[in-house]
Length: 601
Image (tube, rainbow, N blue to C red; front, top):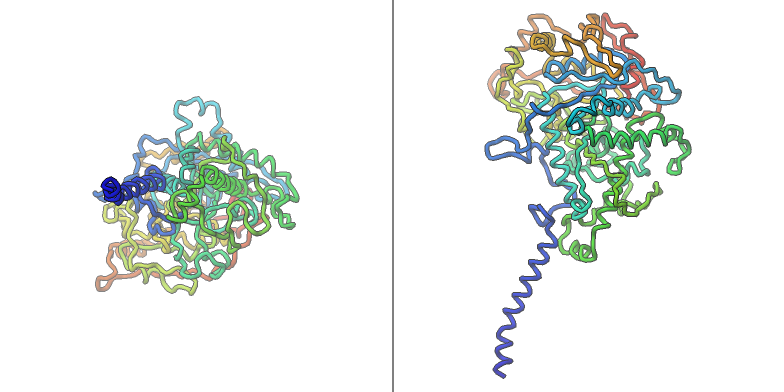
């Protein structure tokens, strides 16, 4: 009896010990390596700040800002000929101190009927691959670790310097790897997943078909899920795509290590060979939209590769799960590696990422240990590198961040995003009140007082403005609104004095030739390039720029030009030629039809 009483007396303590051991075991199982929190949403819809604002040290600097002096970058511009829009890209790069680019596909003659630009868009694959496979370059030690940056040559403007491009690339990679690690759970480490290539991001899975593997496996956007209020991710808006968050790959620019980019481009070339003669694909909707690589679209190939990557990442996630994981998911929803929640592709519901309920392109769900579809591709969801204007024209304004926001935005339509603050603080990598010496004493000379192209829905100031909207006239309308307007000639001459090689030696091409700046951008283009105002207007502009606080009495606000209503943008299946630029001294032939073909996005 005494022994029985003693046993009963120890029973509560025994149960507590067992409970403690089980709890500890569960914590170990539930918490993935390196996790900072046990309970975390499967997606990152609750992350309301971009990667730049998530990595701040106690001293106010960003943790992932990298040194750029010892990083070599190869900048590639696919262009068959020069025109004034090509020169605008060159001008903005040069005044910001970017290294001289290399022109690829220079003077190529692509005349394939029925393909975008006569097939010239494929040069972004073939000519970039030729460049990085050059035997002389490959013989240089460390070449595969250098960065290659390929971008559209006719519709991109730079507004921030190279060091910010590189530090933001690092920030995107860091944030993407953390997000994917949570989504995949233990599969992330077991499979050795590591993103290193960044592409642009847009709102449409285009030109690919929504029922294809290019679109339906793609994960949800990490952007806040209320940026357009109740209209977010619905067809309700300015057009059928304007209210969606950035989610899908856009090939207007891509950056990453040469070695990793080679793998991406070699697979893209294989796909190009497979699809350039393809007709009547099994997944086509009988419209012929997917014929001939979606009629010559390089983007269709990269979009498909990203979709395949995400499909097989889901296959990997499932492969590394156990029966215990299913039970734990019920106890701790949203744990690392848990089942993804239901989603949709343009409002077509998806419960199973590998087997959506609608008619779709079938893929092999078998786990493949050699990971043939894994390319480490990440997207620039937050527009840190570049902002796509396609279906997003009203998402951005040219903003002086030292001033109140609302007067600068102007009147907004019912379907536009509404900023949640009266002021948009500058991103952490832009020192607001620090004078910029390379502006050579011109005003404004601080980031916070300069009119910066700003994505007002999430507060991003992108490095690049990508004018990929089919309404190309916005390139002409907005040229006067940029911070370099009125002083671009002076800044260009300052770079000339510093010895910028592109201004003295010319710009190299992939043909081995060098093209002089004066031949690429002759004097007849200068009227449009510089648009120099009258001296009195320059003086008035600089005086106004010194007013940095809109709350001060008598502060002058800039005149706001509210964008016109946006028309729906169709998926382009044939070459769309923008109107010839109507400026004195520029002839229609200066817009280079061969060059314009590469412009279409």
